[in-house]
Length: 343
Image (cartoon, rainbow, N blue to C red; front, top):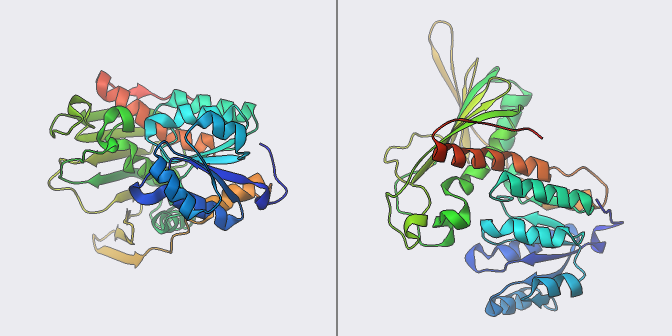
């Protein structure tokens, strides 16, 4: 990976400046905060390019990816586009030796991830996914208490769940072809959380899904109404992941870690540890999570590019949740568990 003497030597850009959540501005501001220089924006909507020009006076704006690569001089781009475009766009930049940060998920298939990782290595470029939630307070607290302090003993199983009952909207995230499916949004976050705690290789994935409950403008291409996966790890731990919009009685607690000495329930704002003594007496300890440190994402990227520290969210790390989701989708379709292949 090419290294820079100082962060101000790194010219950055974004691909996609859509109005939803205003993520283009967010990425550029976070990169700028580290000392990197916002330089260019690529967007097909010219009205949004005008907004980018107002947000960052003097920034170069493009509607052509080839022109941006040829003329802008950017060293790194953040790709903020629908999921099914990540791999194709990233490959264009990586092959030119331009580093890439993809909004999560890195891609939709394991094969796409592998091609991107290969291109990054061959062209000495950084490849990462914007897993800023790696530094959410909820998972920082869970890692401290489960991994470092061993407060629930040896980990046995993990149950992760989100969603509820409600019709998906008509935006592109409700299209299975474009988004990858119901588990490719929050499911990626939950897997990235849990893989920080489950220190083991993936051996097998069983996927289940239910479709066609809701009608949207995407018709038969509407995302699954529920996606469910059972993941086995080579240390004996197993994990259940459910993302749903048809569950009318979803259980409390975002992620539940069960160990030999207790259960840890992780929510975004707080946690709960449940234990039983040998006499059957139940104890519950509740607390607030530590503060989130999402700004550490781009700080780490900048420090990696200037040789100060190792990249935390590598392409290989980003690949792990995608491998699980890819196998889960294929398993649900085939109706059988699928073994995970290791590189």
